[in-house]
Image (cartoon, rainbow, N blue to C red):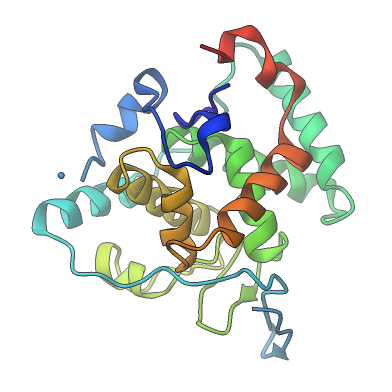
Length: 236
């Protein structure tokens, strides 16, 4: 079985992966490079996940920097990529029920889920994978801050806004955080030629260690996957 981001599920741990060109081609035209501590202070809380890590700041080539800058700069209004409004509503209702114990506000759940779906799909990622990553990284805490300084739902390191953004962007802003997080994960996935295990290791700053990738995979498949993902159209 293949996931929506071009990974053979049965080959996740071995690191063998295939690219899903049909789903990822739009984003690849933009981007295609050759903790358990809890502290409350000033309204911010440290991420409760012991697995919350930190992306490593690296020197980017001019071409890669330019592509990443373009990838995070688009300000188009989020919209869901479904075949019909009914399909979109079914997905939102399903995911909203699963998220209700973590985020009681139904309107905010809708906003979060809509943005996750848009940003993940835009980056050629499976939205359910991104939900699994958010669960592990921040526990769906908007103002989570790790001991290394990573911020928000997807625990994005602040150096990214200086490297590929405007420098003054708020990583606690919902869409900004998800835009950066999905762009960064896509960048690492392309860097690792579709190897999700290694890409997740880079995202968390734990490259080569199995704990974090396996936790994300477990959250993804146990809490956020949907039955139709296992249909025949996703095999082969």
